[in-house]
Image (cartoon, rainbow, N blue to C red; front, side):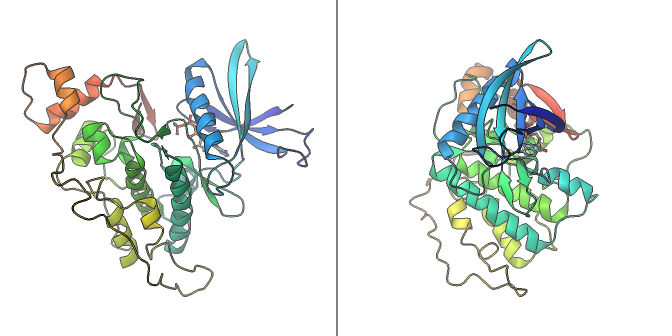
Length: 346
Ligand SMILES: Nc1ncnc2c1ncn2[C@@H]1O[C@H](COP(=O)(O)OP(=O)(O)OP(=O)(O)O)[C@@H](O)[C@H]1O
């Protein structure tokens, strides 16, 4: 495919995203005239390869997942670039859209619609055996017709697959959206995507991050709040009762008891007819909650870090949660980067 790189439309940790035009296609062929091209040098190549491989496996049948049109390599300024061609979201990410509102959130009816869309995307991802692992407003894209789609599958992983990238504890994604089991046990699965969705819903509605944090504060203290004790993210009081109830289903600390995307799709917060002015309640929905027997009878204590204890602590006993999280961070050999005044750790 012949294509021309246009203006830059976004920056990520691993890549730069630009507009790409393919005039020879004229919109009539296999590819649209305008696409987004996500480009990375050798440092980001593995993430792009993973993204393409996951998007290929997810296929094109889910409207709530950004489409991938293929990849290629170019040499630009003497450097080999890896390029991934994606459906172009003309209105950018929900994160950039919200920024333009200057701290305001979206109307609840819009939040409900977007939440339903993201849930349909997540259901497809999870049904195919993957977890996205980096769901956040920056990775939910807004299209000209008001539709939203899930993007950025660079960190997506097969559920249950043991990662070999790092033998120690690994932290991936954005701390603000991290689920307790990711903080405590290094577990990244479909349940973590549901927790992150809850954080995204709070942010969409309130215009503020779900966890309050002071500018410049240490992210370890946030990890402790997420992983330890009963605190859950802020649930906006102005949200309807249905919305608040929806969030309590996302913010269940025990991942085995957290609702799945499939279950949440039947929750009245999203199972409503939004084509009418008056919201029609989702009637008679049946949610098969897991029984106490199905979930672990002895949930693991959030302070348990068995791998970490054997790898990092030797014979020394570590007493406080602060020390545990500090060691978790030290053991992960993270790649730090600061995005939007927050720390992303991979
Ligand atoms: N298909 C697209 N259409 C329009 N804009 C896009 C598209 N894909 C990405 N962008 C923009 O580029 C930004 C970075 O993209 P993306 O998140 O996929 O990159 P990344 O390197 O994986 O970043 P990170 O992992 O740090 O979130 C997005 O937040 C969005 O603003």
